[in-house]
Structures are given as structure tokens and as C-alpha cells.
Image 1 (cartoon, chains in turn green, red):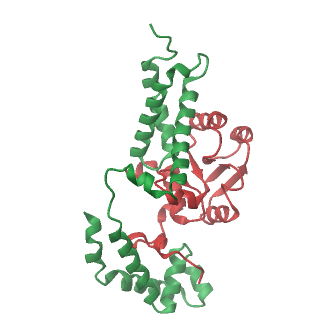
Image 2 (cartoon, chains in turn green, purple):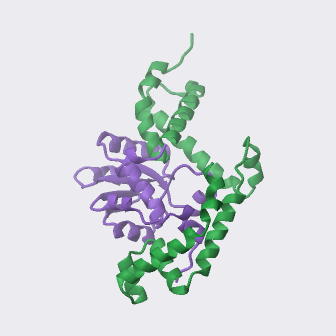
Image 3 (spheres, one colour):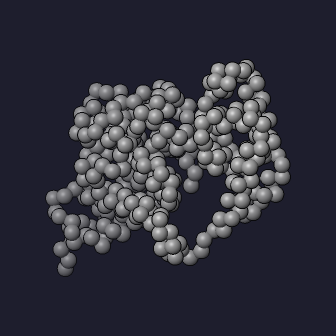
Amino acid sequence: MSTENFSDCELVALRPALMAFARSFVRTPNDAEDLVQETLLRALSFRHQFHAGTRLKSWLFTIMRNTFYNEAVRVKREHPGYDECVSERRSVAAPQEMSQLLFEVSNRIDNLSPAFREALILVAIGDSCEEVASQVGCAVGTVKSRVSRARRLILNHNLDEMSQPLQK
Amino acid sequence: VRHVDYCRIIPQGRSVLNPDLELLRGKHILIVGDKFLATGDTQREIKKHGAQIVGPVRSVDLAIYLLHGTMIDAAILDLNLDGEEVYPLADALSERRIPFVFATGDEMAAMAGNYRGFILCDKPTELVVIAVALFAPDRLPH
């Protein structure tokens, strides 16, 4: 007979609470599911370390936080030695299409006339058309039309055929 | 014109301008973390979209104290806060059904890898992710 301090039922009962916690750590519901799974697996393999009297929910929360945090730190550390983490993957998406697309887009931005480029970039980084108008010293309508023409100039020129490989 | 990294401005031709930033308007947002989590620029950006910042407060105890009797619609907590220490706050927030997320202020590190979490910085693109997670979670992509 084991000396386990919590039952599988108790663990399952806390799943909704864990799911809610997971949503506060990661962006998407799918990643939240994964984080809950990882947490439960860890809890099971460390169940002998659980002390009676500790609240199970708080113990599980701490495991979840540390699981996510350690992974975030690991990702950070692995970046310079990129080969290590690439080797763990079964396949790697071809990056050249995306970098080609980005290269092309930034080229087109560079080739815009200065007034168009300025309007586009200021609006793109989050300034309102009104703010841009007052910074640049022209009418709001002028900013709007410069931005929309700049967008059309960048996007319309056969970017479609370039982006096709990305839509697979 | 300010120096801008083009690649980040127009991901696949979409503008960063996003009506979801309007979700922040009129909200009182508690921020718990050190000065690296919410810099002046970040705070200005949040306020620019009409939200009010409660804090930033450094201590979990103070944050819990503030939950009594302070208008708080949502909270952003530092991912660096120790798990055991921050649990009572996370628990109190969920009991009160106040939405919260954990975020890092270390934008560069988070951008570097396959980071799945939230980034609190002055980029509208990152802010909108947090805004949707807090105030319109049903709209999150799967």
C-alpha cells in the first residue's frame, strides 16, 4: 500500500482551477491545455514529495508556475547556441520564404517616397492619424490617404504570389 | 522618423493598429512587479489607451491588501514573482473573478525563442494580446 497524500480524484477535481491558472500564463487555450498536462504529469511523478497539510491547489500552482518559468528561461538560454534546440525538433519549417517576404516588404517600404514612408511608419507604430498630422504638419485626410496609398503600393505588387508558399 | 524595425511593424502586411486596444479603455489595471516589468514607456502606452494603472506595486502582500476596497478590473503580475509567494494573490484574484495574466517585461528575451506567454512592453502588438486575454478571452485563437 502506498503512502500517497493525494488521490487521483483530488487531482482531477482541480483540473478546472488549473486550466484557469494556465490561461494566465500562456496565450492560447491549446498551450494552456498542454501546460495543465505537463503540470499533472509532474505532480504525479513528484507525489512522494507532497507533504500532508500543504494545500494541493497551491502546490500544483507552484509546479505549474515553475514548469512554465523554467521553460521560458530555458528558451532564453538556448537562443545563442541555437543548434541544441533545433536538434530536438523532428522537422523545421523552411525559414527562407518568410525572410524573403520580409526582405521584399522592407525593400518596398524603403522605396516609398519619404512623405508616404513617414506617414506609414508613424501610423504603423501606433500613432493616431491625428497625431501624425500634427507632427508632420498636414491635414488628417492627407495622412490617411498617404497611409492607404503606401499600403497599396507595398501590398499590391504581386506580393500574392510571394505569400502563397506561406499559406500551405 | 524614429528608427523602426520594419519586420515587426508589418507582420504579413497587417497593421498593428487594432481596435481590441479599445478593450483597455476605462479599466483599472493592477500591476505587480519591479521596475523592469512596467517601465515608464509601457505605463504611458497603457494609459494612452484609456486605462488607469493601480501601482505598480512591488509586494504581493500590498497587492492583496489593495484588492479590498480598490477598484480593480484586471491584474498583470510579474512572471519573476516566486510561485509560492504569488499563489495567495493569484488565488484571491480568481476567487474575486478578476482576470489576470503573468507577463515578462524582458521583451528581447521573450522574442528570442518560442515563448508562449505574455510580454508587457510598450508595443501595441503585445499590449493587444494582453488586452484580449484579460477582457475578451473567448476571442483568443486556438
